[in-house]
Length: 59
Image (tube, rainbow, N blue to C red; front, side, top):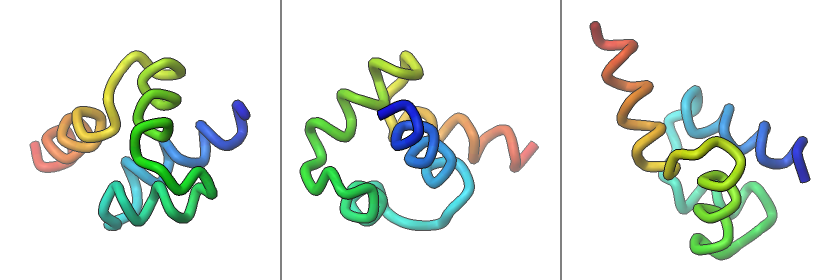
């Protein structure tokens, strides 16, 4: 499961896909568990992680 969360987190910050598309590609196929897993592993919600990364790269 750690590999899956690392893969998902990388896709969130590096790939220009919607969170729903990333969720589908992850194989979990339901947004709620996807968001909970990422939040538990990284301590941040996927949408917040993406916004933070986008802000950092635009500075």
